Each structure stands twice: as C-alpha cells, then as structure tokens.
Length: 323
Ligand SMILES: [Zn+2]
Ligand SMILES: [Zn+2]
Image 1 (cartoon, rainbow, N blue to C red):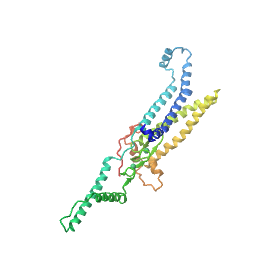
Image 2 (cartoon, helix red, strand yellow):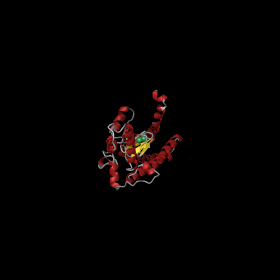
Image 3 (cartoon, protein in one colour):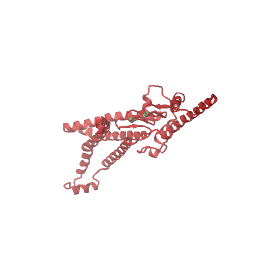
Image 4 (tube, helix red, strand yellow):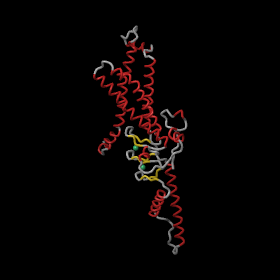
C-alpha cells in the first residue's frame, strides 16, 4: 500500500507489462502450433495404423510407447521442445542477471587517487604556512571547508585533464564504457541498452546471455516458420473453416513478420559485436571512439574464450574492461 500511495506500485507493474506480452506471444505460438499442426499430425499418424484400437486410454498409452510418432514427427517434437526449453532458461537468466555494477575496488582506486592529491596539496599548504609563520598561534591543520574545496578541485581535475567520467546522478566516477540508466537509476558497465521487453538493462554482465536469447529466439521462430508453412499450405488448399483459415494464416504471417524483425535485430547485434560497439555508442551523435581490436578479440570479449559455452545460456567469466 505504501508503494501504491506513492504511485510507485503502478509504475512497477507497468514495467513488467512488455515481458508479460512477450511471454504471451510465445505461449500463443506454442498453443496454436500444437493445436493446429503438431497434434493433428500426431493424431493422423496415430489413426493411420489400421490394426490399432484407440478406444481406451490404456491402449493409447501403449500405442505411444509403441512409437506411434514417425521419425519426422518425433524429430519435430523433440527439437521444438529442446529449443523452447533453452529459450525459456535464457529468458529467465537475462531478466534476473545484474548487468554489472562498477566494481567497488575501481571506485576506491579513484578515491585514493584524489585522497593522495589532497594529502600532497595539504603538505604544500602547511609548508607555505610554516615558511611565512611569524607567531606561535599558527595551526598546521587544513580545515574541513578547505578539504572539501580541494576534493572538488581534484575531482574536476580528474574529469577535465585526465578525461575521467563522472555520473551526476550517482555522484560517482564511472569507467569509459559505463552508462547511467535512468530507468534502473544505476550506472552499468558496458551498458548496451535498457530492454523494455525484458525489464532489465543489457550490459557487461548479461550481454552474452542476451545474444544467446536472440539466437534461440531466431532458431525457434525459423523452425516454426519452416515447419508451419506446411500447415499453412495444407489449410489454404483444403476445405477448412473460416476460423481455422484465419487462425493459421494470421499465425504464419505474424511468424514471418517477427522473423524479419528478429533477423534484422540479430544481424545488427552480430555486427555490433564484430565492431566492438554497444547500441548506446552506436546511437551517440558525437564521433565514436574506435575500440577495434580485431574480430576474434571482439568476439572473445563478449563470448569468452571457451567455444563450448558460446551456444549455451552461460555468461562467461570475462574481466570487465575498466579504464
Ligand atoms: Zn549513474
Ligand atoms: Zn536500465
């Protein structure tokens, strides 16, 4: 109730709507595919065996164990469910994985740099005061206000002269490819973009999982599109009810439309990996800093060096690039 009064609860629920729509789209395809294509196919295989009786549940079970499925249908059913399981695991992992905080050690290193600069400056001030000291009432300590001013001065020096980046929102330094996400209200390492569909930011910590998700989604939708084209063709060339005709046509065309979108999106990200560029960097209007290191190094930076896990929903243990 507390969140509701502050208007936060509705906002929070709103952030989950796109992901819910995404899950519902996947469920829609699954149900329609099973109901209008795979199950009728299995049943037709089933009744095509003339000597079998299909009166009781028990006999049906026996028949299933007797491989009523043909090799082709078996292949389709198993492949579909393997891809679907991999897709679901990856989807959950991308949504719950933290995109990558700026390491505390890195922040401490910068703080220590500033601290060291302040200490050196204080020494200089004290030496100057001692040099000009004429009375015994001299105090060698720099007061808090002066220290704050020095802190501010050296902070600006790091930003202006050394090119360090500073986040006004987090009031903290951030590495070069780190960006602040307004929705997450956090700075993420190598932030790619905030994905509304997944209700999470995509960054250093989950980018590889995101690419895996795109890959599985592309394989899944390509698989459905190719196999379902048979159902679409059969429905168009047979006496079907208007409802079935609409359902099958809509599903197949929606699938083709999503395939085009997903192919373009996946190709863009593969290109971005090759170029070592994030979506945010691509969208920036200012001239881009070239971070090219060679295709393989760029690929290893995202996928890790072990090709065995490239195609599995596992985030590699790569070190973040902090400069
Ligand atoms: Zn920030
Ligand atoms: Zn975000």
